[in-house]
Image (tube, rainbow, N blue to C red; front, side, top):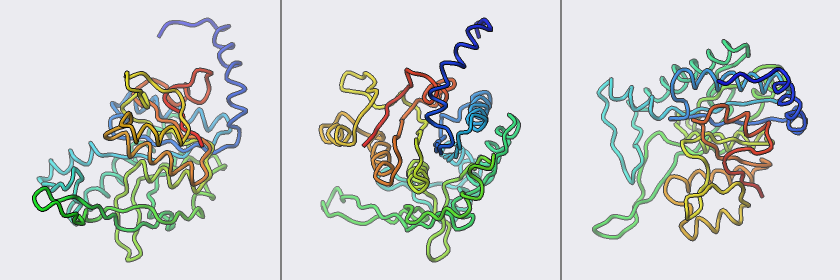
Length: 295
């Protein structure tokens, strides 16, 4: 890192003031996952940034994924996953590992890094305090031979149905940083795995968060010529899905953004989590980073 003079450091802090005031006492949900979690140094930098938010009177809530870590553990244990329509079928053996990795090793690692950086993180999953109740996900695929649509049972995979804020309200605003693993319970008491983006959208919506930041592997939403689109309204986003500009894995991400906005989140930002200090750049500088989606 190039040395910056004390004067420049002071100027940078001073320029951050209006941004800090904008988010004062506000809740920001940050979805951190997959490859954005990267190596140890990236994870430690992320943790420091989260502690900095808490120090500036912002209430951060972290939701994490763990797809790559789950895949590694399944391989190590020799559990072979079945896929349908590109989606992993989560059977009883798999959900046990998913829970172990998400609510166990990944969750506690993030908690450890935040605490090491001087924060007070609390690791939880959607099962704790009945925070998130979910229903089993059903997906349909078209049989290539008969062209008949048929339902696919994805196993222990769910969609959030109801968020109970009792537990989170005990933590937020008391210098405690919730770190949430995207697991929930069904009405029948089964553990269900929830897509981390969807889970973060449901939490942010229930908390009426000022911002939901989705840290991903891409710079944001790109136009036809692969240039970053700095901001989009929901209407624009729907148009870009319809005309194919937004395609592939970006569609569910943008749909999560729209869902969160409909639930009451003020703005959702898709940013590249591999970029150093992505969260601080987005919240505390004029240029921001990534794509902001708003109503």
